[in-house]
Length: 366
Image (tube, rainbow, N blue to C red; front, side, top):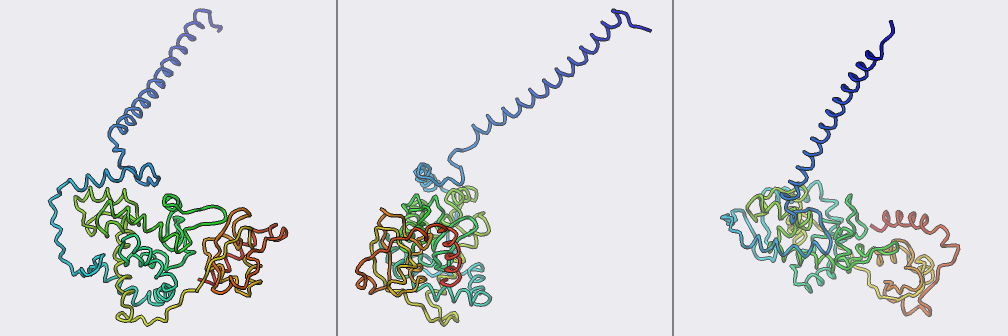
């Protein structure tokens, strides 16, 4: 039976009405969702304290740190800071002996004895210049052992977070404190330059916290996280703060390593320390191949690499960039010409070859 025009009109109107109701319902739900999301975002903008943004590590944000310093100094938390654990107070950095410090002392003396001995053995190649720099910045000389637990005094050490060098500086922090990082040079690996940058960084951190344990914690995990932990705990006592496990271990590790390093024989470490390589500086203006240079002066290329760990490859920077190349003592007087420009064939596959050289150097020199 066929439908009349009236019947078709009724059916069409019914379908259109049903579709309209469905459409209106979907639009209403979407509008409601958007409204809720917008309300939450607006609320977060008003409630989120902008000064508590972790991970900021650029010069503009660094200028905000004194504000935190003022907040900490004016607040009275009513906390008794009397320390009940055993402590040595003769040093610039107080050395405490509690369960955490004793744990790492025992670890270094037993299962970690061999690796810690190797690190102490190598420390004397760099420790005196580092101490001198720390003293120039009016910092406690014990801070030199920060490089011991960070890298074992290995200039080529790197971490999963891409921290690099004996002081394990991140790229942002390194640039902030004046170190040069490019495709040819990474001054985080230079023991002298990186120590100066680390000294300035530690000085700034201590200017905020006025406490060496908090300063060390901030060096490890960042200043904002430590400031937040202080606020949450209503205490400036490092041992009661809620910080990442790595940071809560970092300070007692430093205290244990410092205790042993200052008196190694008392803790069963009988070490024949390595001597630093006596060196002098040659200024080169042209790009210099360390392999060619080493052959000319009858020197091992590994020694040149060890004296110049900031070089990414076995080449000094390209022509036009004067570079102060460290060479073994006595080499400078034997050189009528101090440079040897890299030949064109040597540059054809430089990155691949230098990657192989770098891997070999890391395995043999350190």
